[in-house]
Length: 187
Image (cartoon, rainbow, N blue to C red; front, side, top):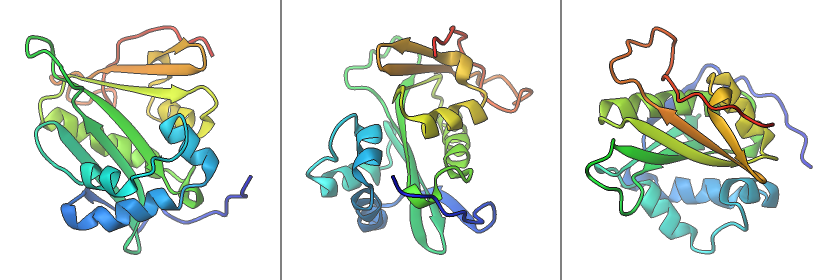
């Protein structure tokens, strides 16, 4: 396992929407992932067609949103959401989200920053619910979930934890984040 070296990233991080011109940077970020990080992100091996993944992550439309974190012009993290295929129009608008942060920049607040901004973007786009699946062994992602105050919204199914957030669009962030459907977490 690699040893993490500290980075002073609390300043100098630029978070912005990804654009089609960021495709090569997104692909490079995913190519830099080691096997363990790829497994934790994709629940298996890194996809073979990273150019297709990068292109889809850089798509911005009513069903896709992706934000990138840049340090010194280098993409070091991506948070994105996508509307599930076949989502019914009669339910509340819902999205599935994912996060990846370059191994060398993990545990420095970038994931937490990206997810905070992704929640803001989801609220701005009228999204009422966000979900994600996390492997129970993904301690770094679970740390981000705890940093956001979402640990109580986790439920366990075998080796996978499901995060189910109900965004409170009328809440003026009195608690500093989204309200969540409370579920007990068996960790």
